[in-house]
Image 1 (cartoon, rainbow, N blue to C red):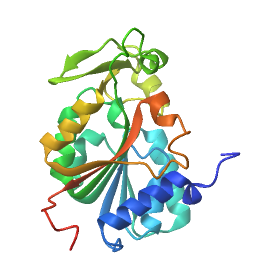
Image 2: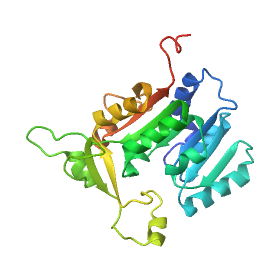
Image 3: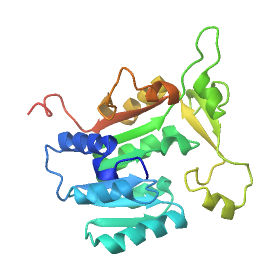
Length: 245
């Protein structure tokens, strides 16, 4: 994209790879990772270049065609793409690492999906997602207003807000063209931030923490506050003392 670094050099990509190197003590070769809702496959490619057995899943034929175009020209034997609904990820796993960026907030049952991810994650989940926040005292929630979110409600036992993806009953051919929208549901549920974190814990992830080093200036970069969107890291099967060893 004009004016932007190539993906390999971008601060977000570098942050993700640093996080994965910590999770696997620098031993990425042969580890399996899945990129959920992989779009054109950019991150999947970076994972393959880093040594992972990298799998990209996307529901849209248009996106997968772009992925296959890239794969045919890079000739990376550890780069794989499949067209499928990410809700079916258990058919393709398990995986040592799961990369779920820009996807959870496109689902209508995110808590159930986090439980699915817990079943397919051997080591670490990287989750980059929008969430909902409560209204500030005496004022409207600006993020909710900017995204057209519903008032705070309860769904799957968790607080959050509904986000309209497209009109209910939209023809599948039109939905196919909305390459960055949901698939199979016309509205999505953005869990409230603390309910989201609790869902990760209830699903069996621990430790769970927020990652900040993709921001060059944590104090002055307003991205998280303006979009209610963060980068979480969640581990599976970690016993006290293991990471220290």
